[in-house]
Length: 518
Image 1 (cartoon, rainbow, N blue to C red):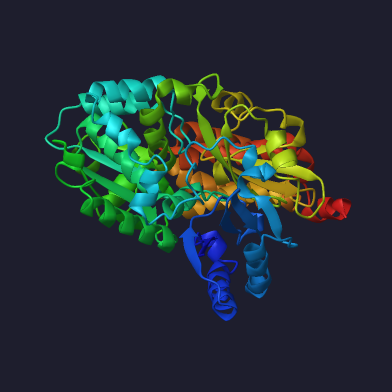
Image 2 (cartoon, helix red, strand yellow; image 1 turned 135 degrees about the vertical axis):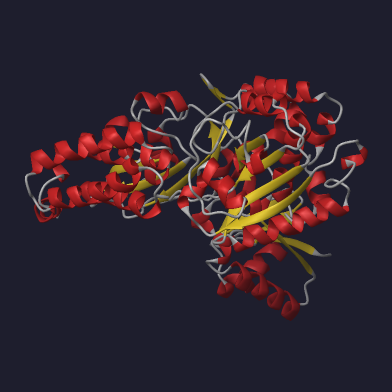
């Protein structure tokens, strides 16, 4: 009898020795004379347990983790005899951290072989496209609109409205562009999905192309993601050979093809117009809007630009129907959000759940508090441009409007946790410095305001004319928020002003506050 073992090849798992574990399992099996079949999957997202290895049993897949190469022989022995082991976690689906989730977008991640089209299809893959081919483009867009899906990249713009605008725009050619330029601190959902379930992105983009009349698509990722890029390129080649990309998709009259383009890692290229500039072979500089990309996008043609997670939600919506997706969530935030827990946190990883869960539940209950064991002092939600929330705001529901009402952002769903040793004035300075470094330089508020902001906050930290310089920072933030061309300069005030508002005591001579903390 051959034992089937699942070992992740996700970059997060590789970083902590997943390849070595797979090799050690093969060696241990050969030495013991046991036949094994190792399937390399993506990660389930429980990063504190990686490498998490699973074995197929009659009762389901049993997990062990975190496994090292030195553990391989004893873990294999436990797998063969279905016996106890210190690293045995029980049935993977029953692990509380996984069981509490509502996995719609990441349903297959960590379960299937991401390079296998047959495995993808065996787990409901391409059912969404199959249904889409029975509908008119207008009906597809109506379904997406009714689902309530909003852009998962941060802006939260209704996906159906964007698609309808492109569909109605005139043009001899149209494009579909996936923004997979995941640059926010503490985020990894895009990478994890490309590495663990690449066909779901291909399927989602194909459905979008049919809906809007596009014939060509691009996935724009970053050079820091070599494993994701390799996985996407391989999946695209497989889909093309299977007749699911190219001419006459799945035997239909539709034509659509895809390619991956790799950026150099400029944060500003996460902004859609800078991304389009980069795709066209130019320096990534923000375009003034209007015209919108939906009317005048890539190469001057109508273009759908959506985040990877938005496209990845589409197959479920078309397969199960708009209502099945919209039944999750709250208010105008429908469906689920893949939330990424990072920073100083005990249980870091990806947690997909319906909108409405509170920030406190995510940090304290699901995340388990800080890794250091010290009290949580601040949480930044929404990447380096997100606001810092103190514990007093932990009752905030994870919802676009609820965060906006408290001067915050959901962004791409990244949560970074800080304990009580953090210097919030230093964090505010970092926000300005980050903006200054990453600015494309096109608009003055972003280019100059961020540089002056970093200098002024440093003066505050040294205790120089604190009240006057705080007033100057507030004025700079107002100018950047309302005068910048894009969200890089426009959102940098969020971390700065939230730090000033909720952690005012930190804005004085740095040694004084740090000594007080000790």
